[in-house]
Image 1 (tube, rainbow over the protein chains, first blue to last red):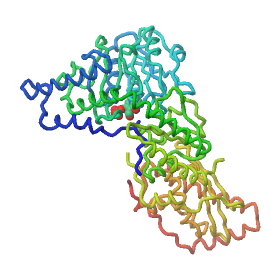
Image 2 (spheres, rainbow over the protein chains, first blue to last red):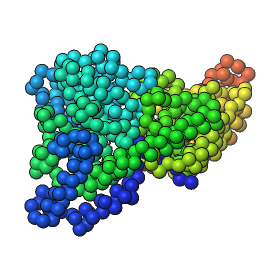
Image 3 (cartoon, each protein chain N blue to C red):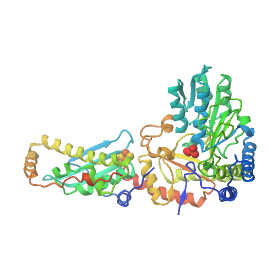
Image 4 (cartoon, each protein chain N blue to C red):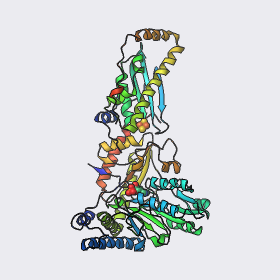
Length: 384
Length: 157
Ligand SMILES: Cc1ncc(COP(=O)(O)O)c(C=O)c1O
Ligand code: FES
């Protein structure tokens, strides 16, 4: 049996999305910037896709910039804002301590441009509290960036509250919402964010295409310059099949949301209950209540996460020890450190991330396999 | 990221040899890596300068387990002096290569074994009676031709 429980790393393309994309590779291959009929056909499709996304996110059409993914969106938002405003007085950027590496790195590299980067902590539950942000913020802050849902532990932040605090001090607010689709309602107006990022492959769309919401009133500097596409904010010929895919995937994700959420919450609960029943000494990382139903991050005492992962992999089960990008990095997860995990636990973690195609039979198989795996590895652990 | 373990590595990971502990070991050592947080414990039983039994416990990654397994398999039956010359590159060779970021696992395993040997040797020095056998062993040392380390063959994957 092959079981894919790494949907936070990426998801398979939904066949319905693929079907929508296919014509834009072949017969409708025109460049939306061309003014002949083929180009204009592509242009219309591009703007329809943008409109579709704008309707879902409740954002004005001209505020949406298509990118190559959330890494680019996050880089663009953080660097593009900082570089456009580098002659202003605000010289501090606050990001949460549990942001994705692309936010951390984009921010860190602004230090050479004279910015100070401060990290607002997350508590033991994996939550960035209003108080924590209030302790740190001041009117010298240009931008606050807090992710909507954490990619490792799946915890949900109160974005509206945090954005309100930022605005009270005249700072802009960005949220990386990559892991939030479709678990949370992304209503840009209601959330009061100035910037937001998405990546299509996290919600059954294609890889290599993403979105940046940019409040059109804010001064930005493009990072990728050239032909002036996307309102001069992101040059380069549009990845039209990808953009069509993103809009369709987002549309389907929210259209089928209610039913999906019911199903996946049940699966998550079932899996966690079963896990606790069948395997001794497993503990959850981060809040259980304030977590998306797609995520379960747990620690298995006495044994190493990578060994568990490899053993499961031999049984056809795909999981992760944290985030996919940190797998090559041997260092323990900074997210788990941040939420105060004891150092003896830092290497014993597995992230299970469920998705649209996860079934109960797959979870039963995984529990059975895990039971063997954990028992085998614990039998020769030096720790007790 | 390339994290393709060889068939041999997976075999040793899935069915490791010499796991467990020795109750009254002649040599024991624990070794850990601060960066990855992994840990290995080695237990030795030595008779007349020869490793007659070796066991290990692991809190580690797949390659940590596999390297300890193949290492213990190899050094069982070796003289202490032969075992001391065993290089991590040979472990990597024996496994048919390791991913670059996993080379340190083999280094750590070999260091752990050597630490256990040192522990054994220190214990010998306190017990003069056994010291004799150590001297004897040193004499014979020269006669043993130790295979050249297969450094050159090491796959730089
Ligand atoms: C929270 C978060 N932000 C950003 C990214 C980057 O997305 P992408 O790799 O598609 O650019 C990811 C995915 O790895 C993520 O989980
Ligand atoms: S990753 Fe450090 S021992 Fe394997």
